[in-house]
Image 1 (cartoon, one colour):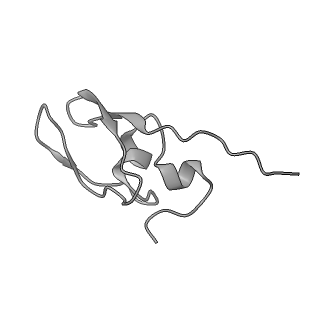
Image 2 (cartoon, one colour):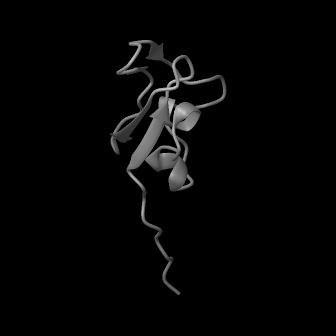
Length: 74
């Protein structure tokens, strides 16, 4: 039986933990994003401890590798 592939969501709404600004971004599929500058307060966000990227820490959708059940940033 063929393995069923699920669609990967590429858009995620990042929320700045400092000012609360929400920005919808398209996640890269070929690299992890370790830094993100908030478009409102210009704070540079970094992943929280235990997370692989800013999308896994501050986004509404985890990064594509995590969605696929793979490890991220190897």
